[in-house]
Length: 183
Image (cartoon, rainbow, N blue to C red; front, top):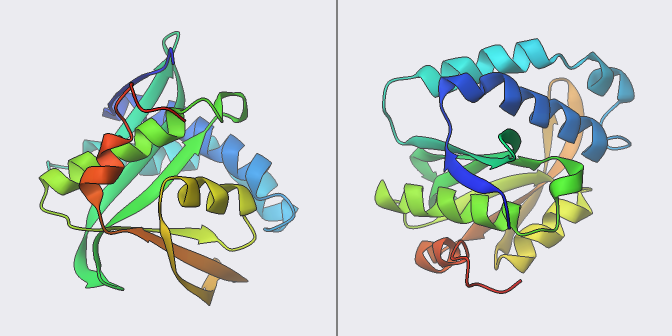
């Protein structure tokens, strides 16, 4: 576990965008049209992340995983304006470089988001995944998430199915970030 987890800063926007775009292209090929994935631009995503990370202090948090000084993954969470499906916070993103997966980094990132949202008063954490993304679904299930709902949704003109997973015990989820926790 050489990756270091830390709070993201606006200076991380480009690195976060790079991880996100590459992860989308690797993960969602076959689920989302290739033309959409190939048209994704790191610059557009970086501009969005600069706005998010440069915002005044609020109830959202983004953490990055660094390995040898390079950002290799990130996770982000926020308090919801109104509870959704009985959850008051959301894990809005978690992405890792493909070669960094299955090393406990994603678990540690999710645990940090859970702890941060719990500190903001959250009692539950909801996340969404494209239903066909079996890898992500298995990851959330290994972390103890319960499947809450599957439903059709439209995103950027595409008809997809999403699965909502949730954790109701944020203390237990946050504890998974403890380095002594075994896989």
